[in-house]
View 1: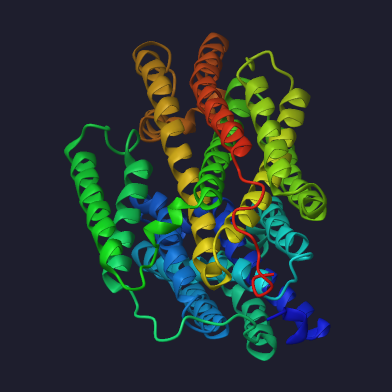
View 2: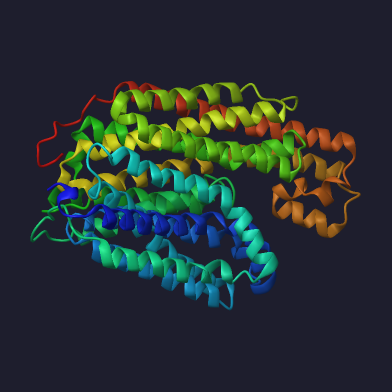
Length: 511
């Protein structure tokens, strides 16, 4: 069924605006916390739970993605979308009312579940309401919104905390989310036939969720909170592997599996998702540790660092928009190859970076990598969507979002292990010699979190030779991140060449 035969142009535009607004709120909530967390901790306490305010949202979102994606192929998207937005808004209200850190973390879990549903459904709905010719252009708006949120998030958070209260970071979601909810409720209609009388794969959902939680938690904690060979990480890894094996057998016997193993037989599905995984591995590693390199190794100010990182976000947004305009003309495979090439060239240049690198060079290369990610994220989404039957559009779309989430998490986790190990060794020797002139309270803060040594007030107390030693240590540590990212981008480039021109022929019904 063609979307234009069911939905008027006016309704389609309202649906797109409402969907992008829901996506923007979820993306903003993932990025706005960096500016607000110091104030929140000062108000609620619970410093030891600091990282879990981020992780709870992230993990819940990752688990919700594949579940909502599958449900969207069985139930009405409108009903699921309304439920996911309501869950997100409920979590926002509870987060704004939180009286301690535990309440805030539980509220962030609720927000994450809602955001996971939103992130899965927005791309499903945008694909449903677009013709094949316009799908690339419409879906590229989603990537643009992500870039916009990454630009505005920290600034918006700082503004709210400075002039209002940190609680309004969450409360502001309510009126804006209500507008999105109203648009979806009034204008969204089904244009795609759902699978009738399909049984829900509860066991598959439970085992997949357990495996996802275990895997992501391992990479969030290993090398930082615990050693890789600690009992905690080994035990969690065993649980993850067991859940993965149970999921495999559950999907083999399920009449309507949450993620059919047959899908991996499609080259478009497997290679498209693998390319998205590797591209996200690369870009999120750069996103996480380029600021540390710019401030810690190059000695630049936070403002200079923000300007350099802005080029990555803008490059991503522009790349996605341009890809959306060109993908129908040049094809999904050339677009993916071009984006992967930009990532690989950017990664190759970054492995040559040192303490003598200019901020301008850093900004240009990050912008190039951002453009590459914009192309790859957009083109591979279309590759994966076209690789399966239209009735499996929900699973195809959510699998792509999940592959990106998984790639980003593992990339940041592995990169963090290398950086932490390098800086810890240098810091251990400096603690014995060069940091004696620091107040005991600052010494304690540095031991608790290595990144604190790059705070301006601590840097001002360090001797020039110690600052130079730390800059070189950061350059060495982050250089490992650049090398790992470069290899991941090369693999992405190789896989992109193997993408089929079209995964499956489109029938009239599918087009």
